Image 1 (cartoon, rainbow, N blue to C red):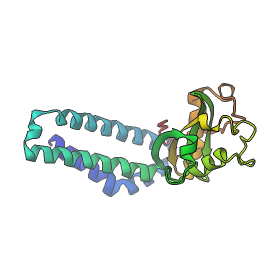
Image 2: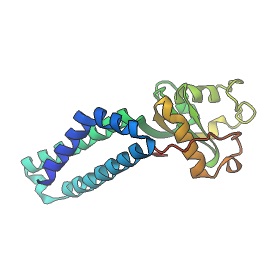
Image 3: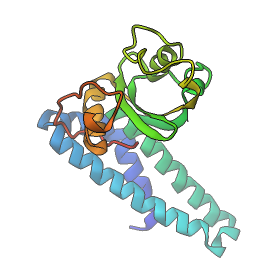
Image 4: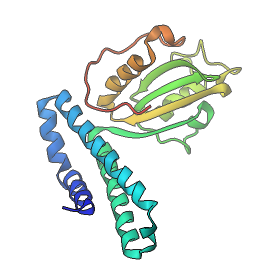
Length: 206
């Protein structure tokens, strides 16, 4: 089977059979599902490297070759979108706190986030209510958000955020992974607690 046929078959498997496959994996537990998803991500990365290399080829001057390259690239993008939908791992990004609080700049979906002040890590957290809504609370100095003793008029425009959207049931897992990655509460001046979760079903991307 040729490379392009493999890309097509792989994409079709995820897109057409993905819900049933991931549902069956979920019944076996988070660990097995997490490994299967990591394997899928590895294959996607492998195919993307091949597509990228092919795009540098002189054969791109051939319309049929270029069409197949672009078709393969689109199929891989569809695969990533479908995996995100089925596993609860969504888009990532970075912005200033002010920009993230603007409803026209950031989708209000559940997720996890990292706050930095002047480039220094201050806190990681999760927002089941939606990342954009939580950033509105922070930037608006909402006294109910828990950080009103740290964020103020003098520093809020110097705060940046990185985020990763996910489904509500994955927030605790990804927040726990953020704490593991960045060294715990002792390394975060604004953090007061950490979640306890040992699941490994989704990948942390920030």
